[in-house]
Every structure is written in C-alpha cells, then in structure tokens.
Amino acid sequence: MALVDRIFHAAFGAFFGALIGVACWWLYGLAHSLNYSGPGMDPVLRHWVTWTSAALAVLGFVFRQNVADVAGDIISGIFHFEINGLPSHGLSTLTCVVCLAIVIAAIWHTTPW
Image (cartoon, rainbow, N blue to C red):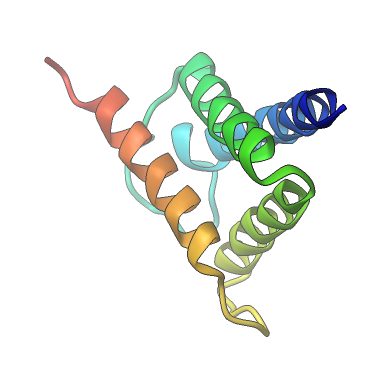
C-alpha cells in the first residue's frame, strides 16, 4: 500500500507542479511579472511545466504528504515576490532546494548550446 500512496502523492505533486509551471511561465517566462523588468526568461511553456511538474512529482514520491507544504511554500514565495513583500515565516530548506532547482532548470533551458 505504501507504493500506491507514494504514486498518488507523486501525481498530486505533478498536478500542482504543472499549475505552478504555468504561473511561472506567465510571470517570468513571458515577463508579465510586476517585479521583473527584464526580457522573458524562457517563452516555451513546455519547459516550465515539464520541469516543475517533474520536480514536484519526485518530491511527492519521496516525501509523500509533505509535497503539499512545498507547493504551498512555492506559491507563497511567488505571491510575496509579486507584491514585493516578505513572507511571515521563514522558508524551509526543502523549499529553497526546490526553488533553486527550478531556477537552475530555467537557466539550463534558456542558455543556447
């Protein structure tokens, strides 16, 4: 039963990762953010959705129900960045690792080879 539980939480993470990927693509890939004034980072929707969905799916498989906390912290971080405010609580190490992985994936796919 533990494997079914892990697969369920991986699918849950992948779903919310896809939603977060679409939001990040809109805000940062196409440069519609209120606080980002540079060119679009990566206008390809598939890159954002694939990598954020995969990252949260892996986190859901490994950490099970804690993937909801990670997704919530990512959404909170995006919201607080957009309103130019600080979150009321500190970010967990896991959240920082996930955000760093998303930034590295964005840079990886926007760099021409």
